[in-house]
Length: 369
Image (cartoon, rainbow, N blue to C red):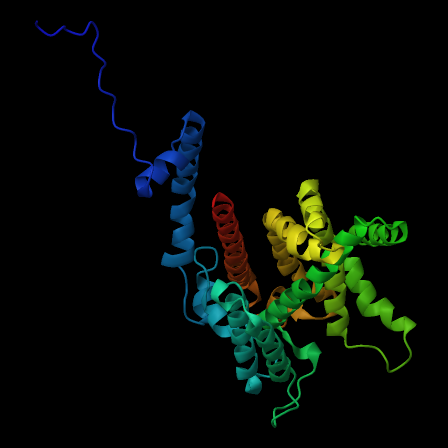
C-alpha cells in the first residue's frame, strides 16, 4: 500500500540564538528588549557626545611633563598630568620623611600581598594566621622605625595610601568578630545581653562617623590621666572599628534570621551544643547569605577612612590637600589630583566587588552539588 501523505507538515524551527561568547553577552545584556535597546542607544549617544572632548582634554592636549609654564598655558584646554609626576610621592606617602621613603613602599606592598593572599583559597590554612601576625609586626616596624637602626617616625607623619590601607584593613579585622558577637547577642534569649547589644548598635548607628572620630581624638583623652593617653592613631582605629561593628552586626543579624529553624533543631538532635551549632551550622550559612551586604560595608569602611583628616591624620585625600595647599604653583591643578585619587579608590573598590561576586559564584556551585 502506498504511504499516506501527512495532512500537515511542521515547519523547521530556526536555530536558537547564540547565548555564549561576546555576541551572546551583547545580545542578552544590551539588546535584550526594547527598553534595554533604547537605554543602550541613549548611552551610546551620550558617550559619542562626551568622550571626544574628554579624550581631547585628558590625552591629546594634556601636559605630561612637570612643566609649570606649559601647564599654565594649557589651562582650560588640556590636563596637567605633570603635576602628578611632581607630587605623586607626597600624595601617596604624605609627610613621611623622604629619605626613608622606601619603608612605606615596602610596608604597603607587604600589606597588599597579604590581603590578596587572604582571598586565595589555596592560602586558607593555619599558616595564614601566622602570616597576618608577622606582616603586621613588620608593617609597624617599617612605618614606625626605631629598630635595626631605622629612624623613628611618629604616627602623625604617617599618611597617604599606607595609612588608608592600614586603617581600613585593621578596622575590618577588628570589627568583624565584634559584629558577630553583637549580632548573636541581639538574638540572645537573655534580656540583659540582648538589651545591651541593642543599645550599643542603635546608639552607634544614630551618630555620624565624624562625631565618633572627634570624640575618640579630642574628648576621650580628657577622661584619662595625664601621660596615659593612647596614640591618636590607635584611638582613631578603635573608633572606626567600633563604629563599623555596629553596621556589620545588623548585616550579620539579617543572615542569622535567614537560617531555617530546622537547621538548629537538626544540630540539637545530633548532640551539638549552642556554641558548636553557631560555629558549624548557623554562622557559615548566615555569613554566606549576606556576602553582598558585608562587602558593601567593607567598601564603605575603606572610603570612610578619608574622614580622619578632621583629626589631623592625612590619608590619600588629606595628603593631596597638603601637597597642593602650600604650593600655589601647582594648586590650580587639584582636579587632576582628585582624578588620580578617584582612580585608586575605584580600582580597590572594584576589586572588592569582583571578589564578592566570585564568592557568590562559589557558593552557588556548592549549593548546586
